[in-house]
Structure formats: C-alpha cells, structure tokens
Image (cartoon, rainbow, N blue to C red; front, side, top):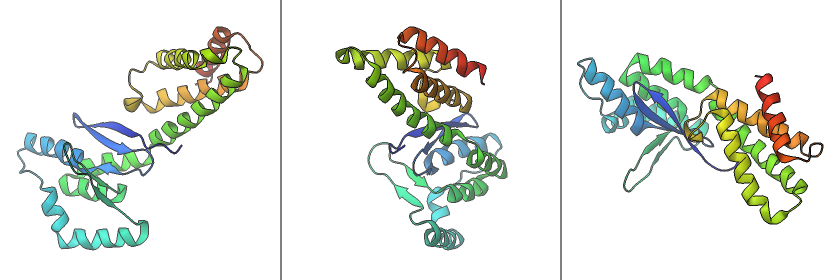
Length: 203
C-alpha cells in the first residue's frame, strides 16, 4: 500500500502516533505520555532536546543513519512533531523508563501495521472486482460507500486509524471474500452477507 497512514496506539493513557509506510513513531507523543507517567511516579520531566544533544545519542543516531538512512524528521508549524526511526524510539523510551522500552518492543513485533497495509490492498482489489460486476456504473461510488460502511459496522469500528489488529484482520478477510465471490454471487446484499459470515467463521 502506497498511501502513508498515521496509526494511533495507546500508552499509559496517552496516544502515540506511528506512520504506516515509514514506520516512524512520534517522539513528541512518546515524551508527552512518558512525562505524564514520570510525574505520577514523582520523577522529573524528560527533556527530548537534551536527549538529542547527548553525545551518546548523536553517536547512536549516526550509526542508525549509516544503516537505515533518515532516522529523525522534524515537522514544523502548528502541531509540529518529531518523527523517529523505531530503534531510536526504543532508545528514547529506555531513557524515559524501562517500562516504556518493553512496550515499544511489543509494538515493533505486533502485526498492526501489516494488517493495516494488507487491508488497504484488499480494499483496492474489492473495489476493482465490484466495479467490473457493477451493472449500473453511475451508482458505483454510492454502492462502494455502502459496502465500506457495512464492513465498518461488521468490524465494530468507528475510526480505522485506531482499529485493533483483530478488526483489521477481519476487514481484510471480508474484503478478500467479496473480491473472490463477486463473480459468482451477483446480488450485492447476499454477496456481502456471505462474505461477512465466512470471514467471521474463519476468525
């Protein structure tokens, strides 16, 4: 999937953003959540600017850049963010708290981004299959919106940006089923009902 999507994850009551394509995390969000946690533990604030000025951090970033290219991006303007490579994200998490480091490792190994990207690809395939079998092309856009809303409802999702791994897996299966069955089952309602039922049975 080509489009960059910003995913959201919960951490200590805060929200941490991650980009689906580059996989970079928001260090700004991490520090905000981390400092709330540190205050609750009676610890002083963590200073991100001071962290980046640290000699050890600079050496680590240089090695990361040699291996992976760009590892830190500063976005400017209102709501500007500092986006960092996952390995740098872990290092910041460790500097804030060992507990945050454990959580960061879990994030790197889960499949949320994989399923977000897979379900984006399966959506394109589904749209293509439904366009081919659409008898009234003037209603295609309207009908796709109906299908997408039905899938959202079946997955129990209000906002795909904060969907769970299981919800994204289910969406992927439903969309794949619709693509595969659209040539066989011409009635759209029946097609979606069967695709949803089959996806939920396969969970």
